[in-house]
Image 1 (cartoon, rainbow, N blue to C red):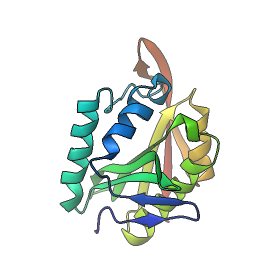
Image 2: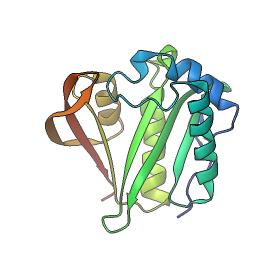
Image 3: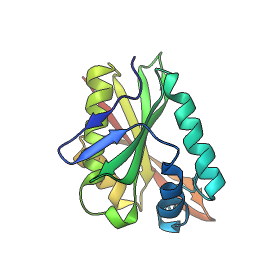
Length: 176
């Protein structure tokens, strides 16, 4: 396995994180409650948390099972995508993505997800890629469907964010 390499699409550059990404991630992701409305996970909630998160990503690039990309459009950081929790027994990994709200509706999430799925399945020979979203998160659901992922399960009330419960939709992409 190779891990995180630079990937490109027609419009996007998927590159390794740089420390100067922390400010944008804090301002565009950490300070916007809509960015973590359905996950409750906000590794960019403060500038220091953003710096630490990006530094952890940078420190992980020597691991061939670490996949973490900053997504750029026209030299601007607009999102993140990664894959984690590789299971060598099942040859399976989970992916997640996030696009800054001011870039929603442009197809950037599905374009980057398609690119990463092709890389993980084609070049890294990972057989199964999974992902999930809250049932109310129609944007993420449509992104996964557009990228060729199929919904395989629903976990009732499996997500609780700020006291609100959501059904968790499980998606899968298989290289076979």
